[in-house]
Amino acid sequence: MDPTTRNGQNMLIMEALIENLPGGVVLVDREKKVILANKKMVQLTHLPKEGFYLTELSKLFEERIDLGAELDKILSTSVSPVVVLHDIPLKKLFYSLSCFQVFDDTKNLIGGAIFLQDITQEKEIDTEKSEFISIASHQLRTPLGSMRWNLEMLGEYMHLLPEQAQKNFYEAYKSNRRAIWMVADLLNVSRIEEGKTEDEPQPTDLAVMIRSIIQEVVSETEMKSISITFTPKKENIPKVKVDPAHFRDVMENLVSNAVKYTKAGGKITITLDQLDTYVQVSVQDTGIGIPEKDKMKIFSKFFRSKNAVRVYTESSGLGLFIAKTYVEKWGGKLWFESIEKQGTTFYVTIPLA
Amino acid sequence: MTTNNEKKYILIAEDDTAYGNVYKTKLENEGFDVTVVENGELVLGEMERRKPDLLILDLMMSDKNGFEVLQELRSNDKFKEMKVIVASNLSQHADVEKVSALQAIDYFVKSDVSVTEMVEKIKKALA
Image (cartoon, rainbow over the protein chains, first blue to last red):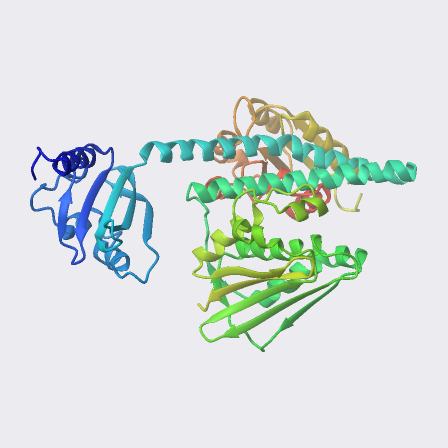
């Protein structure tokens, strides 16, 4: 490289930039041979700059990642170009690792790169946030609980009051119950974030559970004149390994959503089937549906579609986030099909025990 | 009152009067004798004064917490077999396990049960 030419100078500047990046970088060619490793990467890994081998780098991550395989994915051009892995532990700190394609200015793929960034501080902040939510939620339960009990005591005298007062009382009681549910959701989310879900999977009969959940909502569906049916598509569907209390939370969330967002006179159909190596539950409604532009965000924390908020203002927006986390923990999938103003069907699959 | 029973006596350790008043009113209505003490320090003294058929113990009291009270109880020969239900607003498995290890017969989260359910649990424990 000739530093006296314009090109040469540019090259020196680029090199200097790469060397001084606050994150570690490794560049490999299309055969996964290391072309360069910058100063930060060498510092983080204690591997030598000359003679920096991918296999040595992989070993440092204690087999959590197969770097070779990740790079293969990147370098086969038919695949989406960026792979990002978070919370990679390395010598007691936490990193985010990204693998991406590197193209030259004529759009030729010259190789791949690995970028390693220290996210330890972000992770600590996340943990503090979670702990705060946990503490706050427990504190909130105290006045909410005493409110609940005192309202229930008051309830015994409601028949002595005029109808309007009874309505006011009923609304106050419903709000209190909703607030208690929201606190439970917050606690669930903070436990998920802290990795303390206390999930204990055991062989569970889903048909029995689904029937009991339908029993819980039947008075509400009758009030709204919504028909709700449950159809197991086979006899003797085998049990699946899920935490019963958490699976119940998942099903209650899907069923109560169907009830909430379906107008009077609508229809809810729940099915249970065994397909091959897994069991599938579906919850179909003729409700408000999910707008196209919101479909990508439905499983995000706190997200609620505007059409849902219009129907039902108070809800944490956490139910589906929690549900998806649990279902995926059990090796299953949660997804939906929906047409706005026509209805939605949610599907849950769980692999057989 | 039933023919062969005196009223059963329930001692409740609960520092929040909003709960304490509900316990007292409701359980007395259901035919029980009830005393509510507002801190953990007073529990053992009260139990010596009159031995209850059942103790309902809040975990988070301002002075002595429910765990300590339960531990002291179990290390006292007189109260080793005392029926105890723990009522709290904590709900981690770790707390539930700690409390079962100390032979609490039931555990409930106050905000998650109705007054009716609370009464049922008490009746079940005294059956």
